[in-house]
Amino acid sequence: MSRPLDPTCPVCGRPQVPAHAPFCSRTCRDRDLIAWLEGRYALPCPPDEEGEGEDRR
Ligand SMILES: [Zn+2]
Image (cartoon, rainbow, N blue to C red; front, top):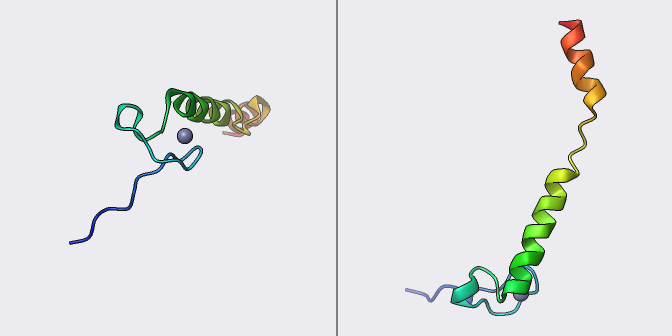
């Protein structure tokens, strides 16, 4: 029986707060969300390629 590791905020590494789990604060929560959104919008998928693929079919 070992205690689980101290949960820390994945954004800044400080101890996380249950109210904002798994983050330490609303700020870090927002920062993580923004980073996630930016990752989604930065998908390397040129629309040209999709059209070409359909054409070759
Ligand atoms: Zn944090």
